[in-house]
Length: 142
Figure 1 (cartoon, rainbow, N blue to C red):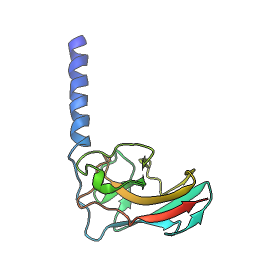
Figure 2: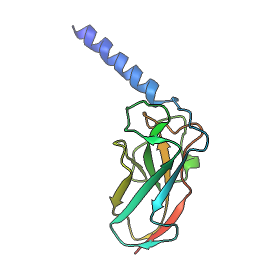
Figure 3: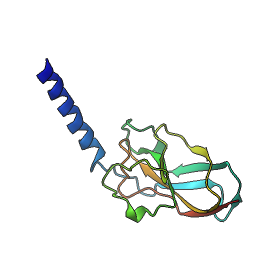
């Protein structure tokens, strides 16, 4: 029994590693994420509501593998060039996951200027190929 549990655990670990690393889903041509609001250059107060948009694809929760879908990740003051696009995106204060398929968030941000960008992840949090991301917007929180 103990050997069976160990073998099962190893199979699960291997499966998790396989889906979280290197499984980039193809993005349909023309697919685009965008930030509906706030507008680029907006001066806002807390809490800040950020509304996500997506064109040419659908939204599906994490761990639900459906072609031409994904879920949003909000990059806050994060350059996507610093991310490993072949691995699952880490969850941090600057890379906020919306694995439930959410299309907006109301969030407290520190006072100051912030760059915001959306990056779509597939069912295993890995960016699509090519990446589906929004333009960067800059907001100022008073």
